[in-house]
Length: 442
Image (cartoon, rainbow, N blue to C red; front, side, top):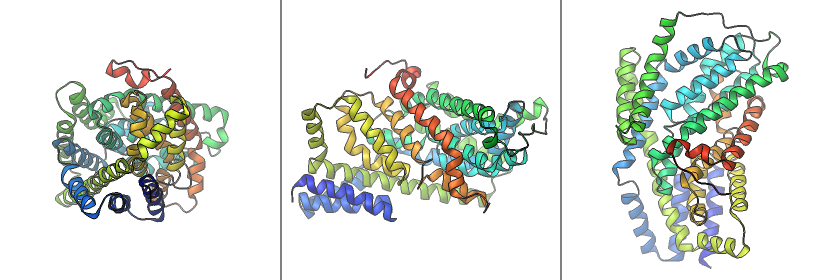
């Protein structure tokens, strides 16, 4: 059997096994091992498997993964998410649809401390949805806003997807973090404009007939400052440390984890039992991510041995397909895969295959990373396997709200994200502005 056919069969097989429920790391590692065995020999496959385990994460840089994970977990178990929402709700209480905008703003701030969309969706489902419903917003709109704005957790740094992309593409994680700030904030603004527009254009979708009562509490300024101080301090330590040149991303993760722990202890929200549960959960998440990276390295080596990426690159050159055509096709594939697979699965399967082709066009990898992450995050909002929608459903415990209602509620946010993706594709300077770099494909 030709080597390229073996590589293609492994690629298709991994998609089938993952969709059937097999753990992505197990599926990729097993098929990659069998693929190398078929292409070379059992001895070579065993050697590459051993090397992927011992060398793929054998760097101090990978310490950034558990440190940001544990920081996000410390933040999640404290009341900082509720405090952030309370402050945002009071600041936007006079705006039409203000609680929806407050949810977006709180998600944006919270994203700077967690690095994952799932944590944001879990917390704000419990915090924001009841408040929006109580103040006259429709349930479909409320769950849609929470699910839609949770994607900010992967775009606003620190972001787990940025870390994984940086590792797979050998791109500076610090540069990805810096570049992600402006697009992340711009997307939050776009979400807010979308909500504000809907509140006038489609009030029947936003409100449940009560036209959104004004938030009925008015905390003093000192109370607002007290509520926001912990999370602002944490953001200043982590992001200020990185962008100020005081910390590397790994050191910033350590400083952030320590600061989040001390804040939780000071608030009397982290007990020895909670600390133990967080430590165990951080270990599970870190082990899972590291196993995925090991599998991804073996998968990448299998594809290289099969010659499939090189053949695709040669075919593209022969077909004289331009960069725009290749990029458009790639983004379409990413969004379609997002309807069936989770974010990490898409990135680990596609990038080893696509990166050689994209790099052949001289593409700026910082910009390409952000474009990839936005396209992947669209998949979190699309049926049938929009992960964010299912997280909201699991945390809501409301039988009246169906999963389809959540997808319906996220539709305006999904359309906004698609338009936003087109903007950052057409104008790469948005992604590179904070780095002081310029690059364009047109």
